[in-house]
Structures are given as C-alpha cells and as structure tokens.
Image (cartoon, rainbow, N blue to C red; front, side):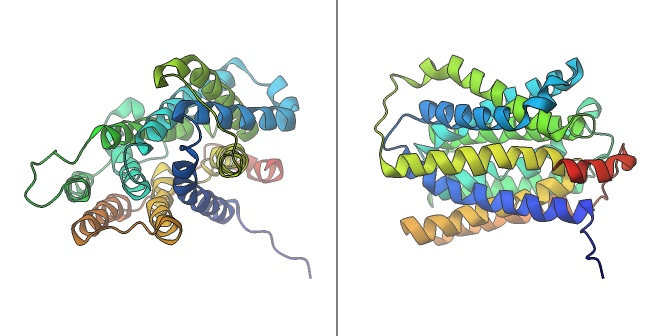
Length: 315
C-alpha cells in the first residue's frame, strides 16, 4: 500500500517549526561568537557563505527569473539585511533571552502594519480590535522584561533593546514582503536572491560597525557554519516556500516559539536566568502575541492552488 504524502500545508507547518527551532538556538551561538568578531562582519560572512551555497544549488532557477521576481526578492533582501544588522548589533548589548523575546514582537507588529491596506496581503483579513489589546499586553511585557522595580518607564530600554526593536520592525516588513511575493515567485529564486541582496547591503554597511576584527576560533567557525547553512540558506528557502501555503498569521504564530527556544538554549548553555519580573514580562509578551494571533485565526488561501504539486516537488 503506497504511503500518503503529507499535504503541503502540514509540511509547511512542520518545516517552518524546524526553522524556528534552529533560529531559537542561534541566539546563544551568535552571542558567544561575537567575542571573536564584530557583529556586522559576522553577518557579512554568514550571509555571503549562504549566498554562495544557494547560488550554486539554484543557478538554473535564477537564470529564468523575471524582473518582477528580482524586484520581490530584492525588497525582501533589503528588509532582511536591516533586521540582521539591527539584531546582531543589539545582541552585543543585551542578553540572548531579551533579544529573542523583543524580536518576537514581530508577531504583534505584523497585524498592526496590516491595518494599512496596501501592506495587507490578499490572503490576510483586516486585523480586528483585539490586535490592539494584544499589542498593549506585549508592550507591557516589554517594559517588565527590560526594567527593574522602581525604575523609570523606559529606563531599561537601552541601545541594545532599541536596536532589537528596530530589528523586529524590519523583520515584520520582511515577512509581509514574502507574503506578497511567495505566491508569485519561485521559492528557490526568492530565497537565493534575497540572501545575495542582503549580503551586498551588509558589505556596504560594514564600515558603520566600526573597525572590524576577526579571530578564527572553533566557536566562531561552528556559529558561522550553523547560521549560514541551516539558519540562513535552508531556513529562508523553506520560509519562502512555506508562505505559499500559510497565511502571515499562521507564519507569525509559529514564530512565537522562537523566543521560547532561545530562552531554553540560553538557560541550558549559558545558565542565563530571568528574574520573576522579567519572566512575567516574557509571559506577557507571549500572551499578547497569542491573543493577537489566535483571536480570530484565519485560514490560508492560495492564489495558485493548481501549483501545489509542482511546489512540493520543487522543495
């Protein structure tokens, strides 16, 4: 009896969950590796290696890319580069757990941005007022996560946390860009070109991070290998494909697990512990995210349902 292949939607959920697990563990890896190099140089090396790998694997697909394909991928690459630059620079000035939970605010930011009709993908319904409640709860959690008892309201939001907030905003635009483009552009083309564009932007902005330095150590090589191959080359190709079958809401909901995985990794490897106040803040951020994404849940719609079999074979 032949085995039944999983549906594209189920496969998209499983693969994207695996991606989020990898992303969550990389916060601690990158934090340790930044002792051996500067943040922006690390990003450049990571993205360049990923771009070379993807270009070698997907050259045939890229050759047939249309001008519209390249436009979509370039826009995604710009926002991706901005997100990485802000996040990695911020990670040097805050903890992996705080960085992950603040980055997780992307899940609240996305519905708020889709209040603007031109930013909202056709597969995503107009956000309801509950999104504002979720944003308020998550913002309260952010304050508790970053401040000490009795401190001024924004005193705990230092440069590291502010850069990470900027990262979450850039990632939100990246997710929305993919939601618009993923159903119209080959996943391999979209994944490859956006990484190449991101690498180019990282090269251009490298001087903004100060004088770069590099000490090749085993932990740096390990971090570069994992982040370039698994967390970048494979991950963004999978995300580009998965968003052909998942709504932005479902995609963002899966992303809520990233800070949880990051916190568990930091706890196990760095023995990083959050106090009661910070844990309450982290719980409120997750609560706000879940309220925003689960009430109500929307079902994904496909612009090209006849392409499902072709896309599964492509991945």
